[in-house]
Image 1: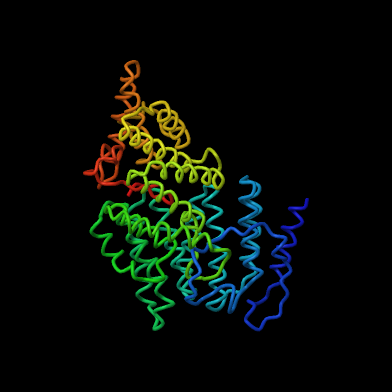
Image 2: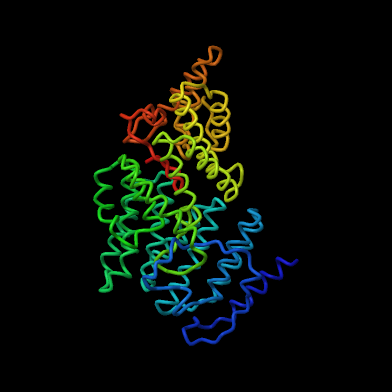
Length: 441
C-alpha cells in the first residue's frame, strides 16, 4: 500500500505541472530527495559544457519522477515493479507540454527512461520504438537525440542487426554535422559521442582501419568521456595500445563514480548505453586488459568484482552474468598455461554455468539454422569448454562436438576462435568483449 500511495502521489505531483520551471520559477518541489531511493542515472558525465539539467531551465519534479521510476523498478526487478515504474514515466510524459525546444527535450528524456526500463525487462521492440520517437524530435536539444541514436545503435549491435546499426550511426553523424553550432565547446562532447558510436559499430564489424578514422582526435577532445571514452579505449585495446587503453578505462570509471545525478543533457544515456552499463563495461574491459597484459592477479580481482556487480544489477541468472563467467574462465585458462598448472575443474565449472546463463542451444543444433543470442560469447564458452573436455579421455568425443559447434558459430571477422581462446600468445590479436552489447571486438 505504501508503494501504491507513493506512486499515486508522484503521479498527482507531475500532473500539476503546466509549464517547465525556469530559472525564476518558485514552484515548490513536492518530493523530498531524502524520501526517494538513490537515483539511477541516465547521464554519463558532468563536464560543465552547457545544457545543464540541474541548473538553468531545470525541471526538478520530472527529474525526481524519472529517478524514482528507475529506482523503484530495479529495486525488486519484478514484472510488477517495472510496470509501476513505467506507469510513473507514462504519467510524467503525458503531462509535458508539446511545444518548444526545452519541452520537447524533457519529453525525450522521459522516453529515454521508458526505453531503458523496457530494455531491462526484455521488451526490445518497444524500447526501440521509444528511441525512434526521440530520434525524430526535430526541436529537441541535440544531446537528447544523439543519446537516443547511440542507444539504438547499441541495441541493434546487441541484436546482431549490423547493417541497421551502421545506418543509425551514419544518421547520428549527419545530425551532428547539420546542427554544428558556433559554440564548439558545448558541441564537442556530443560530436565525440556520435563519432565514437560509428567507431564502435566499425569495431564490432572488424573494420579497424575504418574505426580509426572515427576515433581519430578523440584523445585530445576534453568532452570524450563516458560511453565515447569506453569505445575509444576498446579500440586502443584491440590495437594493442594497452597503456593508453588502460588510461581511458580508468578515466571512465573515475568520472562515472563521481556522477551523482542528472546534470547535462549532452551526456544522457539509455538502454545498454545507460550510465550503469557503461561503468560496468569499463570495469569489465579493464579486467580483460589486465589479463591480456599477463597481470592475472589484478584481472581476477577486477573480473570477480565485475561479476558481483553484474549480478546486483541484472540478477544472478542473467545472460550478462554468463558473459563475465566466460571471460573469467578464459582468464583461468591462460593463467594456468602461463604458470604450467592446471585449472580444469575451475574452468569446466565456469563454462558450464556460463552456457546455462547464456541459454546456449543444444549441441544437436549443429548444422541447423538456429538464432543464437550473443553468438560469439556462446562460441567462446563452448570452444573453451571443448578444450577442457578434450584432455579427458572419457569426454574427448563430447569435446570434439563442442569444438565443431563453436567453430561453425564463430562470427568475428578480425580474430579467429583459436586466437581468442589463447590470448596469452604475444603474436595473437587481443579480443575485447564489449559488455554493453555482448559483442566481441
